[in-house]
Amino acid sequence: FGTPAAASSTPPPSPTASALPPTATPTLTPTLTLTPTPAPPSAYRASVTFLQIQVQNDADPFAAGELLFDYRLNELEGEWPEGGRYTSIESGGTLDVNVTREMQLSPAESLRLYMIGTDIDDPALFDPHDPMGVVETTYDLSNNFGAGRHADKSTCLDGCYTLVYEIAVEPAP
Image (cartoon, helix red, strand yellow):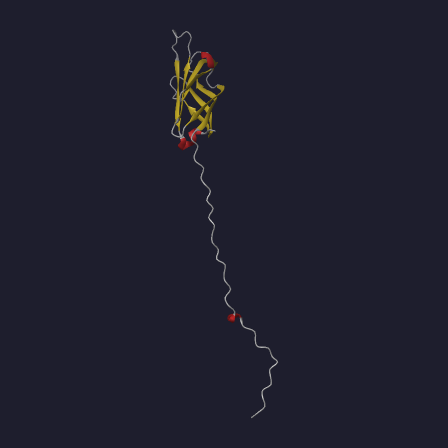
């Protein structure tokens, strides 16, 4: 019957891309890194610096006022000027105080500031002491114990003043 077919010298065709097995796609797994939240401080150190007293009305109609200021910061008490000696100043003047008091507070405590000013008349027999009013305020953890600079006006009874002070707060060691 016929002659046998000659062997082909042509190589077999290469497989097409569709004939290749699918390449595995790498699966990315997100990594979650947890950083522990530090515990809140168990105590805070607060320092209150009385910077100035700005006198609007010295409560003395005839001369400069002879002023004395008593203050309380929580349980700490003091007076300015120290030693119970008053300082003389006219209305419109500014007294540089620069007194710093420090205290430690727990997160549940408040920082309470109270100051009362008095025009000391000597002798009081002819002109009784004149109240200069009160500055009173309270700060707690919700407002960072009042950290920052403040200028609070007194209640202005016979006399009137503005207390300028600064509070610094940091975690206690």
